Length: 186
Image 1: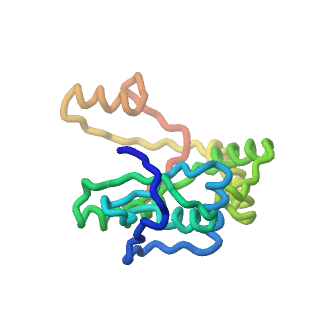
Image 2: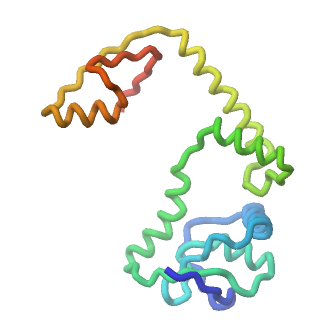
Image 3: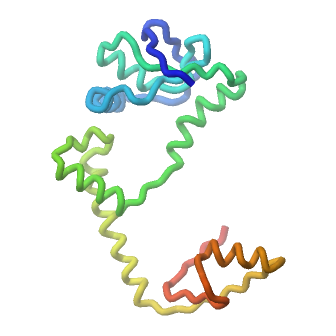
């Protein structure tokens, strides 16, 4: 894949793009591009049609850019292209956050004097990051619960048993749990 600069006027937004971009989100993308650079190229279908990057295009227009970085994805079939347009947006939404690590990173960035709004979080969300990180202290309460759970895992052979022991990180035949484990039915 090769990144190239493409004239904005030549780009064709996908007419059936189901992802929406509010004015405030486009402003956030524009602020990010202004601060960090245009680091995420717009993905094209080989005929200058946009597969991914509609919000980035709107932000580039807001910034009065003439050209943007693009990558051509000519190898996709029509069905793959349509599916990827949706998948590119949805898969990112399926991710979660480690609130403790996020709080540490945000705290460090705040200490560096970085404008935290550049990350896309509003003030309420940032407050929630720190509140949720503090809620993880509740885990310490679980340490005081001493409940033993017994599990029987039947392996087909010694090789499977060794793989299981390795994955669980145990050296002995007996595994004990000294923390409360809550199981939810699937």
